[in-house]
Image 1 (tube, one colour):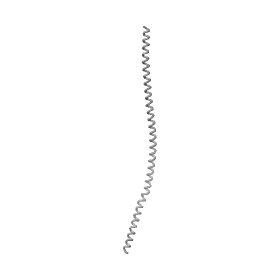
Image 2 (cartoon, one colour):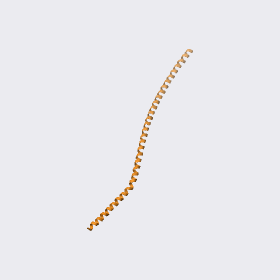
Image 3 (cartoon, one colour):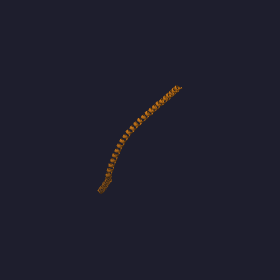
Image 4 (cartoon, helix red, strand yellow):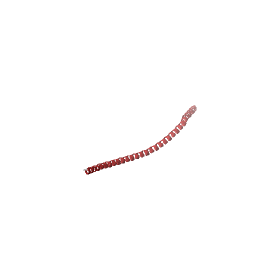
Length: 119
């Protein structure tokens, strides 16, 4: 009877050991799958981060260029405004001078027409 119990216990032990080892293999496979999926996800995220960093550099470069162009345009606008301010006082003066010349010319015409009317 002892041998029967010994062999029955040994067989039960073997069955339990096989189930345990099978479960261990499944767990290792599952861990391997999860690890692989995690590594793939990390690789995708790193690729996305790299792409976003490149896009950020491009956008920053474009922004710097646009800011520079804006500053140049502001500078040109300021120069044009200053030039306009310089020219603006001259315009009324020039108009007034033209009016005075025209009035003088009319007066001279009137004087001449008066002088010719006497002849």
